[in-house]
Structure formats: C-alpha cells, structure tokens
Image (cartoon, rainbow, N blue to C red; front, side, top):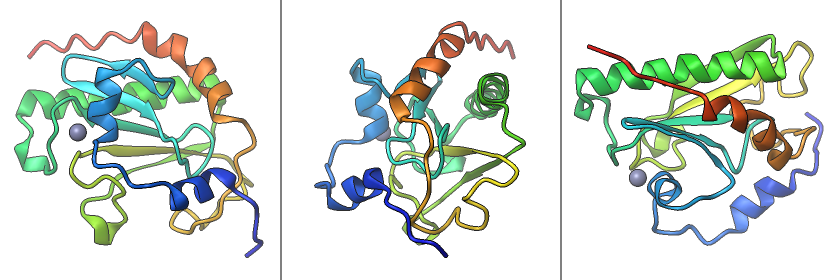
Amino acid sequence: MKTMWAPWRMEYILADKEDVCVFCDGLLKNDDLTLYKGNDTMVMMNKFPYINGHLLVAPVQHLSALDQLGKRQMGELLATVERSVDILKKVMSPDGFNVGLNLGKVAGAGVEEHLHFHIVPRWFGDTNALTVFADVRVIPEHIKATYENLKPHFETLNLNLKA
Ligand SMILES: [Zn+2]
C-alpha cells in the first residue's frame, strides 16, 4: 500500500480527545460540519473523513445502542440515511456507498457513546479500495468545499414522516 500524506488524520491522532460529544455539540452550535438538524435526526460531515463526502447520520438524542431507539426514531434515522445517500448521488455522483454502524470501540467506533451511521461514497477506481478500515486515505476536495456543495440540499430536506 502506498503511503500518502493525510494531514486531517494526523490532526485527529494528535488532537486532545475532548469529553464533549461532537454530535451534541454540533446540535448546540452553528458549526461548519452540521448539515442537517431535524426533530429526531441530524447529519454531519465527518471532520476526519475516510473519503470526500463521508457523512455521519445520528439520532438527536444522545443514545449509544440501537435498542434505545423507539420505532419512530428508527424510521427517521433510516429515512435520513436514505435521503443523505440521495443527496450525495445528486451532488457527487458516486458509483456506490458503504453504509454502516460501528458499535463499540473494538468495531472502530470513534464516538461510541452517540450512535451514528457512516455513509461513505465510493467511486470506481477510487484510491480507497480495501482501505476503509486502514488509516491512510486520499481526499481530493477540501471538506469545506464539499460542505458548501451539500448544505443547500440538506437545507431543503424535509423529513415529515407520519406514522
Ligand atoms: Zn451526543
């Protein structure tokens, strides 16, 4: 495997791991990572992405386990994942996606106390093939530029699921 310079990963490795939850913090602040704040769910850019366009979809409530979610919240969470995939398709035209949950530190969860789905867009021939679980990745577009491209689509996102 080639070694590539990924400064954002180094920043993550060297950063003081704060006690504050990034998701709860994103809900309180107007930061440049949070794309969507709904009644039950939220969407953030991953500050330390595996690849450009790597999104995190979380319940608004600070919960760590799937069985703590109610049926409606579960539905909203999956609907938000689906809509986020849709927006990424529209804006970034990926060829596919890795979508998943890392439950527990042993599974690679960086923030294990607040449940979140990872959405990782994939392109044919992207340099990240088989490295989703490794540490070195290439990100061709700066994260802030991606945020600007995605934000308008999440601003019009309306998830009024009626049970
Ligand atoms: Zn939280």
